[in-house]
Amino acid sequence: MDYSVYDTADFVCNDSFVAWIQRGEQADFWKTVEEQYPEKRAAMLEARAIITAASSLPAFTLKEEVSAEIWNNIRRKPVTRWYWAAAVTISALATLWWLVPQQSHKKDFVYRQLLQKAKVEHPVEVVNEGKKPMAVSLPDGSSVLLQPGARLSYPACFSHGCHRKVFLSGAAFFEIYRDAKQPFVVYANEMIIDVLGTSFAVKAYEEDSLVELLVKTGRVAVSVQSKDEQVILTANQQAILTRSTLLVDVTSLQEHKPLAATLETYSFVFMDAPVDSVMNTIEQAYGVHITYDKALLADCRLTASLYDEPLYEKIRLICKALEASCIIEGNDIKISAKGCHQNVIEN
Image 1: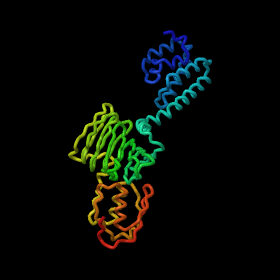
Image 2: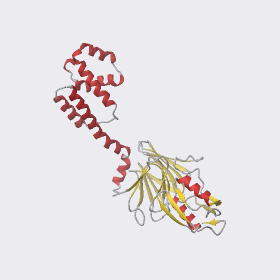
Image 3: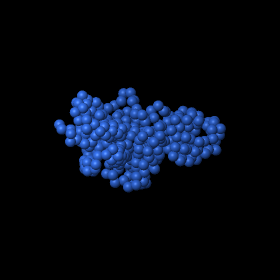
Image 4: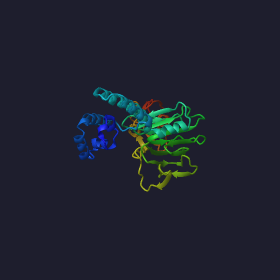
């Protein structure tokens, strides 16, 4: 190879030279080149600076025509130090121009595709950007415990005759308000979950090779995008979808192995329990904050089974039992009661 005709751009485009700069490969060979072509040492140093600067940027891929245009423009110009400094800056800006939209879409590409395919106009989107689970109340009374980093979208028209369908990216635990006339559908990557009223956990991260579903109570029907077959799951069963093959494996769990969002560590069956204890359980399980007059309700006790109820249905039943009113604003719940007239309150 005659390196006497090489300029800086040629060295930058040479895969072997790049491998030497980045990983030290063929070090002896390129040191020999430096010695044989001392007049090219400046070009090699400039190329090293460009490759090193580019290596500090996140991984990216330029469109072929964009990359070609950049290098064609570079080669047309006189090779001076100031020009190459400018070229490095321009290349970095071009890289970021391409990288930013690519990364933002790549993170939730399938999720966005599902929304587009479903033609959901002006969807309502909730994103848990915190470090703790987030309780989300849906318009139909269903509740979702959204894990950190997860996002959920649903149509603005969701109840009262509209389709109940949500789109999930990440992990979440669902408690679905029962409505036989209006099925509830969850789209999680390639998995489709149809349900009337039940509770279940879904793990569907964009970058994972699997989609996992675990049914806590009730029944759900699972299908896969582009396939007509459905599989029915009941309580304590799980379905694992391998995304590369679109095959679903259904197993029964002898011992419950919940996903991170299933609330399995909490019991919502209360026997003559103090109201304070009931409120604490709900706050810890769902990450909500409940405000009420603790002194006024200190002697009130509750006997209720709220095992299979969505979060805000739990709150509604408790308020009904206490003859109290409640105001729900996001994760803040305010309960106003006049006290209790009996030691045991049953819903």
